[in-house]
Image 1 (cartoon, helix red, strand yellow):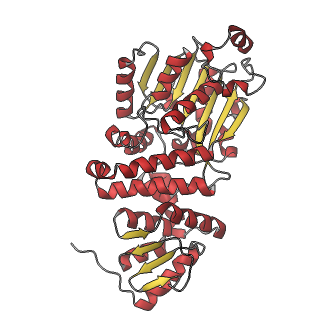
Image 2 (image 1 turned 90 degrees about the vertical axis):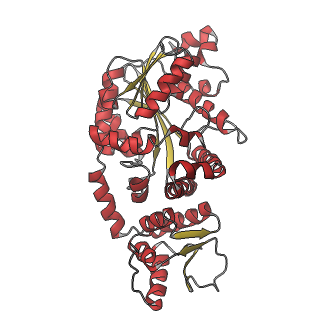
Image 3 (image 1 turned 45 degrees about the horizontal axis):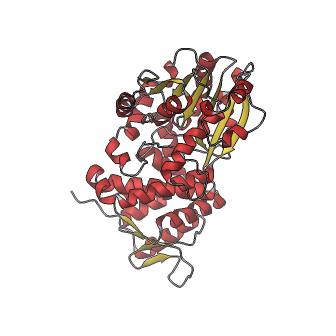
Length: 419
């Protein structure tokens, strides 16, 4: 059945184009529907042009520029002439300065808060929507170990593979892992960090995840690498973590649990590491509280939330955890995303074969939009190191973070100093 057209006259279309352009802060981009444009073609220094296919799409943009653009681009009813990332960067910067959010976007966000609540059942649904697409998809554009979190680039010329290994070492050093210790990992992805901790730092790891496909691949990899006796991958929610551990590690999970569950997470951490353990939370955040993109929550990341540091403190404060170190790796995530998008584009035909054109376009927009959000500072990447009040394994300085060797290869005197 053909979709009904929206009966707008040319004058109304022209007015709507101007209204939309104003609502997003007058960025130096052009909106175009047939012969109608805003700003007009006489305006110079335009970064890119958004070509709108029909009046129905124009109406959706007027209702909510973000959701309307996301859906229109995914479905091929909006095309971009020019660099997609630069266009999104210009729009995000101008929208932030204009400080405008449509009433419709606010309404969608409230509805998503209820529909995608991170309850035990809701979290399973949300996580599997994203991570259980198929590992073959992620293999097209991630590194061979399938590390799907911000990399750490010791040098600007580091490859993605080198930077992901460096990130895992950076995390391990921050929590001062020592041979024989027990580590709980919440949200382990395809298992790369858990296996890295076991192989290079001599610890025993219990890693929890509710993605069936990720857990299956992680277990197969542990067997293949002979680490199944050191690393146990458990298909379960973080709320059900049990046992006693020396350290708690979570990389890229806090964004998925919702601020209303932060104190519950702190309770889980406290019952696992007590007052003597230490840990790290690595997460996408913001400089101030703000709702997550409703389009990304609808299409890509249901249930997602990027907290401010003040909001994240709800994990630590009720349980007297001391925050020892905070690092912002925003520029590193920008670079990570740029490399991911480059690989994604080079694998475009294979992505389309796996997921179809509409989903492929949605993911292209998601990756490009994420680059833009980190470039303009709408998003940050925080690593927060914390410890219980009785923790004795706190070094004097940060020298251990920049060593070229894993902890177990260091001099015995250094290890004794850490004990």
